[in-house]
Amino acid sequence: MNRWIRRAMTSRGLERCFSALSGPYVTIFMLHRPLPGDRSYHGTSEKLLEECLQFAVKQKYDFIALDDLIDRAVQGQRIKRPTLCFTLDDGYSDQVTRLIPVLLKYDAKPTLFVITDFIDGKDWPWDAKISFLIRNSRLREASVVMQGSEIPLKLDSVKDRVHSRRLLSAYAKKIQSSDIPEFVDRISAALDVETPFSAPEDYLPASWDQLREAEKAGVTIGSHARSHFVLSAMNPGRISEELVYSKARLKEELQSPSQIFCYPSGTTQDFSRNHELMVRMAHYRGAVSTISQTSYLKDIRRNPYRVARIGFPGDFDQFMRYASWIEALRSKLPV
Image (cartoon, rainbow, N blue to C red; front, side, top):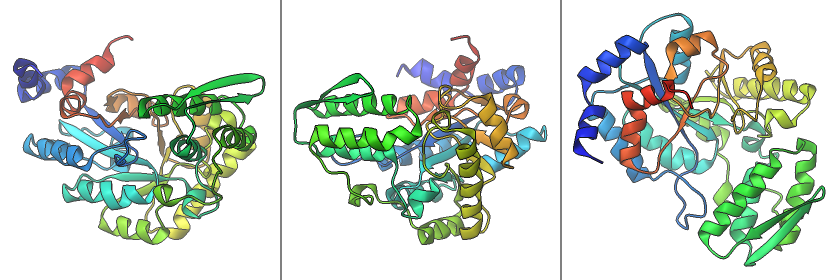
């Protein structure tokens, strides 16, 4: 990165000027799995995460818990700048054992959103099943036919397999949740890999005991629904049941779970204004999406059920940009 750009990104004077003109804002980062050894899916390196947190501490960034952030925004309170917020989605065991300890080391106040049926061992996420099948197939190519559509799959390289997994996941999000088990079965047959009934070793969920220990250490645990099906793929009755049930399970098992909901997948195609209303009616105080932009407090106050988050990047320079006033400015520009 050009040293002048880097200097501009980290300039407190420029940041203060921009914040005074635009209003207070915060970068909410979203993490998923740690980086796997075979790089069969994208993940976060603990080394990179620590490097980024060390930089944030050196630059005197503030860390804020998500519930606290949304409460402050709704109440019209201001925050100091620059401020970062860290969230993790799904509830895998390796998130608790590998990523969360790094975040806690720097008192980054993380929130972990969990799929409650996954934690309970009732099922494991449909997208994880697709990942497992792609990862373990010995074929070099295949195709899956579903509802008259053929999805060709290339499996020659890690890059091909990542692309094929994304194709299958994108298709799955467009069909009804009731059709996804059949779709996974068709993928299983096409790739000649049996789908395990329970999550295999590399896809194990965190246990409730792990989550309770994480909570004691400073992690807030929130709902990522019951099944991980996107809301747009479910009927209203099923959505309401998932929202209420997952919230209740967290309350049964934990001392002080988050009052914020995390939309499964969370793109603008995965939930609507009607779903935002349903989340509100289920007595959540807000909800986070995967709409990738800096979050302004005035926008959160206007609608706390559509809070934007930015995926944690794969390199340090990109982290610097995402955490800076320059990314906040970019988020203001029309796309």
